[in-house]
Image 1: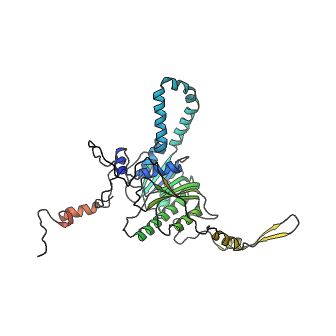
Image 2: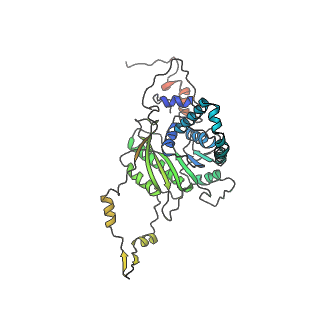
Image 3: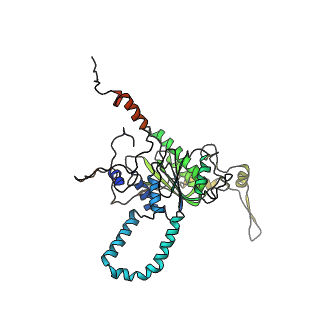
Length: 386
């Protein structure tokens, strides 16, 4: 958030500093995980447009350190409270189970955390995090793929291979362009940024993997949903409670990655620019070639693949597919658009991680050289109209 923007220090902004998060956007990912279970069975993750690192920080604390938040964290606290209240009697009853299943599950969980691999990419520099490999690269450039593959598998990396030997389970992107205020232009630029994140995700995502990205909702956004539906079994749009209602942002949650037959992902020919889904002459001939089926009575049935089925799909609304829209986040959580009273003894905290290269840094330097705000020097008086 730039120095010249209006004050947006809401409850989540203050809560993020109190709980040690780098930015308030961490709660968006936590609420998405609470609704969709994004981190279940996940050990390899790629975080795109990661700076300043709040989403990578969530991944580090959940997958590497094993911390629990939201509903899972509340259940863990309730369990600890119950153990404390019941005392030794409760612990003696659970002694047998702890030596058996619980210890075994803890050992499996520890091994899972040791195998976690997290790679974060952004054009801006990012301060390091435990268990996270950071790359400073452009997600739209083909040269990023070898860097990403080497970061994912440094021991088995082969420069000649253009796809991941061990694909990742989850790709997330919280990137957004510098908005101009022209909504149609901002929505278009954001959709192109989402396409760039998707094209990179197609190169490293495993079948059945998940993809989460920020999206700006507009009048033609259903086309983008339908295009995502080609690549994923389930596509949903979610609005976390920590996302302001005044913002057009939402998040697409794509589950069940299944690329079309003979589709090859590449940033040299990215999908959405010049690339097309497989539609060469052989595929076209296979689609138009009638299928033959010999019945038990010896008769031959021909399936000519008429347009009747396509017309039937359009009549039932299948031609225009709209993703389900969900609001996620506990209703008892803070409302990002509400105003809450602060205690009188509250102490203002500094940011957990100040920006390493803020976009307004050069503007501040130029203002200092000019002598202050709007180029005025100290002691200089404004002269009104004569």
